[in-house]
Length: 434
Image 1 (cartoon, rainbow, N blue to C red):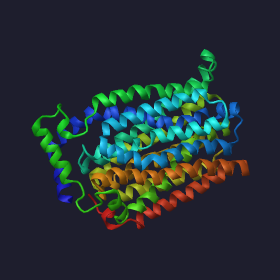
Image 2 (tube, rainbow, N blue to C red):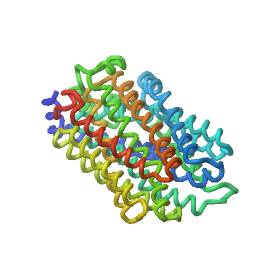
Image 3 (tube, rainbow, N blue to C red):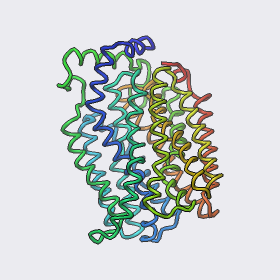
Image 4 (spheres, rainbow, N blue to C red):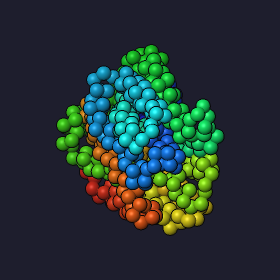
């Protein structure tokens, strides 16, 4: 398998076809993923207005934020098994249309229970999108290219923070009261409606199989299909049950759970940390919140290229987690100094944001076929449980102590534990270089 991967990455014909495929499908997928990630973080920008209008405590806000993840987790694996049966194109389009409508419906929320119910529904509608896209990419790209391609996909998440944070600040600052709606209503409406349109584009533009891509010649189709098949695991899990039984599979679920605790700690609380440090203007908070995502975008591109070139995945993931832990500790130290806090958030973003695509180069080394569709969804589900723990934990600690600093230190400790597991707790199949 290592020889096949080396041949695939060294074959100029494969390189050319992969570039052609990437230019054809990745821009649309990245735009879709940008809106998916914006759907995750827009609640953090709506926090202050939403809490004031609904009378929510930080614990109640954290609960509502976490209910998104509860819905996501409950429907994640079933969603991806349906995707495997009906085809990625149809199912990804369905996901985008339904979650876009549910997100736009946030404009009708007037009570805490409506907030809880709709956040749960949005999570349920979005369930399966991220692992479905990751599975879809395994059908089109050989293993030797997946570090770069996965980094390219998750670059969209960084762009969601880079673009979405300032835009969210501008919406809250300048669209307040427009058409009789609050700024946070506009935030959800403008985040949801484009997803419906994108779902229709996905249905029309994406193809489920290489042989359906009429924009590839027959020779290009054969070359790409052969390269993808050669670099897929032959002895890993080919079904969901087989994936679960594969050594190291559930450990990856634990690793991703801990990564997501850190990720949600950044996504949901970065605007709050900046505000608590002394910045009150929503537009400025939006611009400053973009800093960790800029750092994450640069880091993930560099790490994606270096990990593909070296064939080393595990050590890059562990190193990024250590960097993220340093960022969380520094954010706790400098919580009252805006300039140093932004530097800490930049370090945090470089570690957390880049660790996620680096991690997703690992599961395809263990699973394939239905095992990849259901298995990637299951790992993502286990990871998303961290999205339940993190907001509630941080909110509760803040309510009890009056400060987010102890929670930042707790997340730093869990992130270091995750790095340790990556270095010593994974099986040989995940330690081998590609």
